[in-house]
Image (cartoon, rainbow, N blue to C red; front, side, top):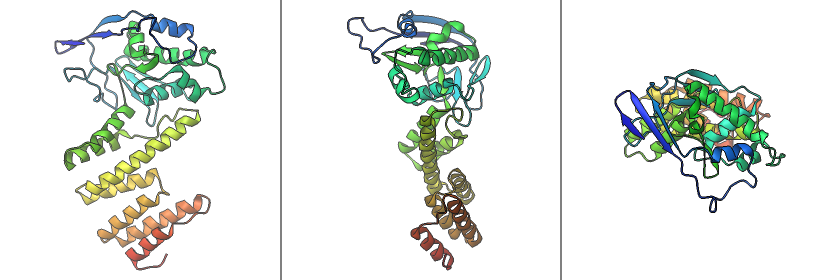
Length: 316
């Protein structure tokens, strides 16, 4: 890909199909739609002179070799399932497999096999029922093309490479990718300032649960895993934020994400105690007790009760 001028991007995307004798397929059977994907022209040259979209989440994670962002479509899968492009936006309706397939493609950033999609979404259906996969895939591709307003870019947006389907990272970015990248950058940060900046960015990107339009069990499990990772990132951020008010806000957000998380509540009680806010310590403990009681009549652990008593001088 080459960049010419300040406003024009000339994208040359080369896909080199493997020789027929050596190509090894991931799936046991190949449907007509896949054969069409595999035989598309190996080179597409499409001049693009439009500006990138301006959704709530700005493309930032995907870059060309010259360091210039090339993402023209931004996909949100946190709090909503919406894609934004130069021609507008498109939603994925709840109850359709389009949203779940999109979520799988986002999670499988490097590529998703058709076999894996069937295992997750249609475990009781055999691979020779091609429409289960290719129907939602075609609808998803149509939505991407619509928001980009470039019909001939369909095969470039949703690629079939090496037996796997993937969202083209040169043309598409997602809020989940950006969040995961920010968490990875925080782990590899060379200084506390860099780590704080990355953790703040990750926290800002988490607008809500993963794939709320999903209808299959895997989406709920993925959402829980991500929520856990975000809570841990918030707790980590709370350790390094230099301002007490920022720490309070970070911990309170972690508490809202998981009101029955005793690790979060204990951290909040220690923080408020250090500030001399014993009333906030009491409120934090009371809220935890109420949340646990509503969850099958549970109560705080002995360790949490001991901490509360030590901080306040009162037995729980």
